[in-house]
Amino acid sequence: MDLLILGFPQSGKTSLFSALTNRQITPGGYSDGTSNGMAKVPDERLGPLTEMFKPQKVTPAEIQYIDTPPMGSGRKRDSALSGELLNLMQGADALVHVVRAFDNPAVPVADGAATPEDAIIGMDLELAMVDLGILERRTDRLTSSLRGAKATERAAIEKELELVTRVHDALESEVPVIKQDISKEDRLTLANFNLITAKPMMVVLNVGEDDVADTAKLEAEWRDRLSEQGRVVVGLCAELEMELAQFSGEDEVEFRESLGIVEPGRDHVAKASYELLGLVSFLTAGPDEVRAWTIAKETPAQKAAGKIHSDIERGFIRAEVVTFDDLMAAGGLAEAKKVGKFRLEGKAYPMQDGDVVNFLFSV
Ligand SMILES: Nc1nc2c(ncn2[C@@H]2O[C@H](COP(=O)(O)OP(=O)(O)OP(=O)(O)O)[C@@H](O)[C@H]2O)c(=O)[nH]1
Ligand SMILES: [Mg+2]
Image (cartoon, rainbow, N blue to C red; front, side, top):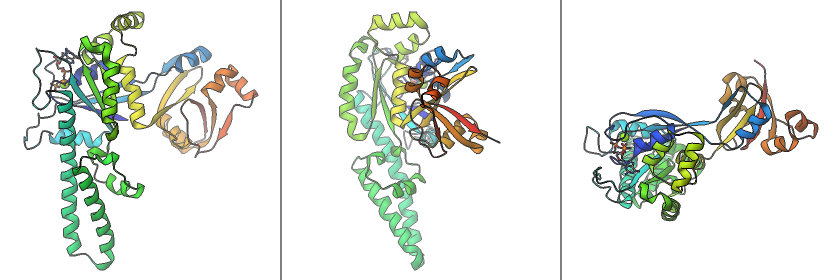
């Protein structure tokens, strides 16, 4: 899963990226390139599983974040979004809009992003413009193909034209595609156009270090305001999070507590990313490795097995499944089996969060 970090110039994108991926990057003046990095997904089940299995290795689930150049840095200035940024957005599973909510006289405020409100409205408008353009080009093509169409082809073209027009008009009245009432079948048709506002979006309010104590309040306020657009909202201080991420263990905990930060920002964003994309983790556990794996909620067991290795997916026989809670209550795999908590599931079994799984396969 790829989440693309985007935003106005100097909003704190790279600081956030650095906090999430624990990359040591000097703040400021690193505007051009794109960087990819992995962030660990916090999982309170890994600790107890490690206790139980004493594995050689513990591997948390990871999600990928991509840092991008700021909006407005494209060479072609007809749009604030460069072609490169557009391609990146179309390839991402979700977008993370970093909004500047900090005061820093040393860092000039970008045009059009004087307040968080301006930045959010401005970004939404930019993204909607992109989609409107895509939909209008499609309308033109469909209209012209309708002219030369055979009678048998007309119905399909007219149907798509109706869909494209409907989505276009709703978007023009500021309803992002993701929030529009569209049938499953129509969504499949739209998937071909890779519309940006069809992607889930998280808004990260990047607050100043003096405001960290009020972050939860600000977050709740913006969550209400943006709920209609289906946005997930996170508040944090990117610069502080970046610094805190370089500490470890007790030092970090102590430092956070002294600042009144309840949860590390990277954990907060990772959880919000799961929520945004409907993700869950299943677990594998043994003496070699205890590990969490990211999948979409209810992924069929056979497909989930493919996360581990394509051979396991191809040669899938069955999945032995025990829930994390049952495993802990029983005190071990053998004990869980004895009390009948071990289930044998077939390839279509919809995997649940916290399933501890052993895949049986043959190749
Ligand atoms: N006071 C304060 N300054 C911040 C915060 N986050 C970022 N900054 C400063 O703002 C400047 C820009 O931060 P970056 O993380 O580089 O922002 P960016 O969005 O990646 O910038 P571009 O890639 O150039 O668009 C740096 O000088 C940071 O130190 C914050 O939470 N508080
Ligand atoms: Mg940057």
